[in-house]
Length: 159
View 1 (spheres, rainbow, N blue to C red):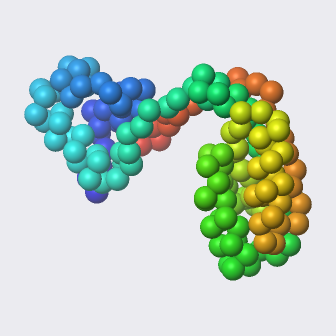
View 2: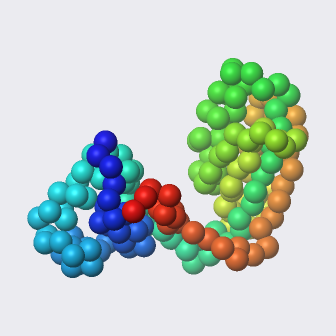
View 3: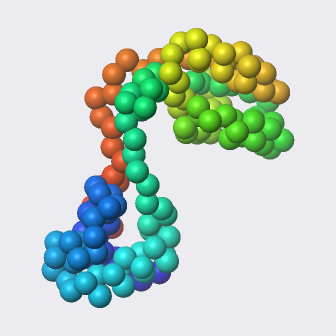
Protein backbone atom coordinates (compact mmCIF):
# COMPACT_ATOMS: atom_id res chain seq x y z
CA UNK A 1 0.00 0.00 0.00
CA UNK A 2 1.50 3.32 -1.01
CA UNK A 3 1.31 6.15 1.54
CA UNK A 4 -1.46 8.66 0.97
CA UNK A 5 -0.50 12.20 0.14
CA UNK A 6 -2.56 15.38 0.31
CA UNK A 7 -3.97 14.83 -3.20
CA UNK A 8 -5.14 11.29 -2.37
CA UNK A 9 -6.83 12.61 0.77
CA UNK A 10 -8.50 15.38 -1.22
CA UNK A 11 -9.73 12.84 -3.81
CA UNK A 12 -11.19 10.70 -1.02
CA UNK A 13 -12.85 13.73 0.59
CA UNK A 14 -14.43 14.72 -2.74
CA UNK A 15 -15.68 11.20 -3.49
CA UNK A 16 -17.17 10.85 0.01
CA UNK A 17 -19.28 13.92 -0.62
CA UNK A 18 -20.36 13.00 -4.17
CA UNK A 19 -19.32 9.73 -5.81
CA UNK A 20 -21.03 10.77 -9.06
CA UNK A 21 -18.55 13.54 -9.74
CA UNK A 22 -16.54 12.97 -12.93
CA UNK A 23 -12.81 12.25 -12.99
CA UNK A 24 -12.37 15.48 -14.97
CA UNK A 25 -14.05 17.50 -12.20
CA UNK A 26 -12.02 15.76 -9.49
CA UNK A 27 -8.81 16.38 -11.46
CA UNK A 28 -9.60 20.07 -11.69
CA UNK A 29 -10.38 20.31 -7.97
CA UNK A 30 -7.11 18.61 -6.92
CA UNK A 31 -4.88 20.26 -9.55
CA UNK A 32 -4.07 17.22 -11.70
CA UNK A 33 -4.76 16.29 -15.29
CA UNK A 34 -7.42 13.66 -15.90
CA UNK A 35 -5.18 10.63 -16.59
CA UNK A 36 -3.06 10.76 -13.41
CA UNK A 37 -6.16 11.56 -11.37
CA UNK A 38 -7.94 8.53 -12.83
CA UNK A 39 -4.88 6.38 -12.02
CA UNK A 40 -4.91 7.58 -8.43
CA UNK A 41 -8.59 6.73 -8.06
CA UNK A 42 -7.98 3.24 -9.48
CA UNK A 43 -5.06 2.79 -7.05
CA UNK A 44 -7.24 3.86 -4.11
CA UNK A 45 -9.85 1.30 -5.21
CA UNK A 46 -7.19 -1.40 -5.65
CA UNK A 47 -5.87 -0.72 -2.13
CA UNK A 48 -9.39 -1.13 -0.76
CA UNK A 49 -9.63 2.43 0.55
CA UNK A 50 -12.65 2.93 -1.70
CA UNK A 51 -14.76 -0.07 -0.74
CA UNK A 52 -17.74 0.78 -2.94
CA UNK A 53 -19.71 3.68 -4.35
CA UNK A 54 -23.35 3.96 -3.36
CA UNK A 55 -26.33 6.28 -3.35
CA UNK A 56 -27.66 7.30 0.07
CA UNK A 57 -31.46 7.44 0.08
CA UNK A 58 -33.65 9.51 2.39
CA UNK A 59 -35.52 6.86 4.42
CA UNK A 60 -38.49 9.14 5.13
CA UNK A 61 -39.02 9.87 1.44
CA UNK A 62 -39.04 6.15 0.60
CA UNK A 63 -41.62 5.35 3.28
CA UNK A 64 -39.31 4.23 6.10
CA UNK A 65 -39.60 7.07 8.63
CA UNK A 66 -38.98 5.02 11.78
CA UNK A 67 -35.40 4.36 12.86
CA UNK A 68 -34.88 2.14 15.89
CA UNK A 69 -31.81 1.12 17.85
CA UNK A 70 -32.35 -2.34 19.29
CA UNK A 71 -30.15 -3.64 22.09
CA UNK A 72 -30.04 -7.42 22.21
CA UNK A 73 -28.56 -9.65 24.89
CA UNK A 74 -27.81 -13.31 24.38
CA UNK A 75 -28.10 -16.05 26.98
CA UNK A 76 -24.48 -16.96 26.35
CA UNK A 77 -21.78 -15.25 24.31
CA UNK A 78 -20.05 -18.22 22.68
CA UNK A 79 -18.77 -18.44 19.09
CA UNK A 80 -21.68 -20.69 18.14
CA UNK A 81 -24.33 -18.42 19.69
CA UNK A 82 -22.82 -15.31 18.07
CA UNK A 83 -22.80 -17.02 14.67
CA UNK A 84 -26.42 -18.18 15.04
CA UNK A 85 -27.50 -14.64 15.90
CA UNK A 86 -25.50 -12.95 13.13
CA UNK A 87 -26.68 -15.47 10.52
CA UNK A 88 -30.28 -14.76 11.54
CA UNK A 89 -30.14 -10.95 11.49
CA UNK A 90 -28.20 -10.74 8.24
CA UNK A 91 -31.33 -11.99 6.47
CA UNK A 92 -33.68 -9.40 7.98
CA UNK A 93 -33.94 -6.58 5.41
CA UNK A 94 -34.99 -3.98 7.98
CA UNK A 95 -31.71 -4.44 9.86
CA UNK A 96 -29.40 -1.80 8.39
CA UNK A 97 -26.47 -2.17 10.79
CA UNK A 98 -25.42 -4.71 13.39
CA UNK A 99 -22.72 -4.16 16.00
CA UNK A 100 -21.24 -6.64 18.47
CA UNK A 101 -20.49 -4.41 21.46
CA UNK A 102 -18.76 -4.53 24.81
CA UNK A 103 -19.08 -2.40 27.93
CA UNK A 104 -22.85 -2.63 27.92
CA UNK A 105 -25.55 -4.93 29.23
CA UNK A 106 -26.25 -5.79 25.58
CA UNK A 107 -24.26 -8.00 23.26
CA UNK A 108 -25.53 -6.42 20.04
CA UNK A 109 -26.93 -3.11 18.87
CA UNK A 110 -28.98 -3.14 15.68
CA UNK A 111 -30.07 -0.19 13.58
CA UNK A 112 -33.50 -1.04 12.20
CA UNK A 113 -35.69 0.98 9.83
CA UNK A 114 -39.42 0.37 9.44
CA UNK A 115 -42.47 2.06 8.01
CA UNK A 116 -44.37 2.18 11.32
CA UNK A 117 -44.78 0.79 14.83
CA UNK A 118 -46.97 -2.12 13.69
CA UNK A 119 -44.30 -3.20 11.22
CA UNK A 120 -41.65 -3.07 13.95
CA UNK A 121 -43.83 -5.06 16.34
CA UNK A 122 -44.26 -7.77 13.70
CA UNK A 123 -40.50 -7.79 13.04
CA UNK A 124 -39.81 -8.02 16.77
CA UNK A 125 -42.23 -10.90 17.36
CA UNK A 126 -41.65 -12.88 14.15
CA UNK A 127 -37.90 -12.46 13.79
CA UNK A 128 -35.85 -10.89 16.58
CA UNK A 129 -37.53 -12.52 19.59
CA UNK A 130 -37.50 -15.91 17.90
CA UNK A 131 -33.74 -16.07 17.30
CA UNK A 132 -32.20 -18.89 19.29
CA UNK A 133 -30.27 -17.68 22.31
CA UNK A 134 -31.79 -14.19 22.62
CA UNK A 135 -32.44 -13.41 26.29
CA UNK A 136 -33.56 -9.78 26.19
CA UNK A 137 -34.41 -7.01 23.76
CA UNK A 138 -34.48 -3.28 24.52
CA UNK A 139 -35.97 -0.98 21.90
CA UNK A 140 -34.90 2.66 21.51
CA UNK A 141 -36.95 4.76 19.09
CA UNK A 142 -35.02 7.57 17.42
CA UNK A 143 -36.84 10.87 17.89
CA UNK A 144 -34.49 13.08 15.88
CA UNK A 145 -31.09 12.72 14.23
CA UNK A 146 -29.20 15.99 14.67
CA UNK A 147 -26.05 14.56 13.06
CA UNK A 148 -25.88 12.12 10.16
CA UNK A 149 -22.53 11.76 8.46
CA UNK A 150 -21.42 9.36 5.79
CA UNK A 151 -17.99 10.92 5.19
CA UNK A 152 -15.07 9.99 7.43
CA UNK A 153 -12.63 12.59 8.74
CA UNK A 154 -9.28 11.89 7.05
CA UNK A 155 -7.12 14.34 9.02
CA UNK A 156 -5.34 11.50 10.85
CA UNK A 157 -3.85 10.23 7.57
CA UNK A 158 -1.16 12.90 7.60
CA UNK A 159 -0.31 15.76 5.34
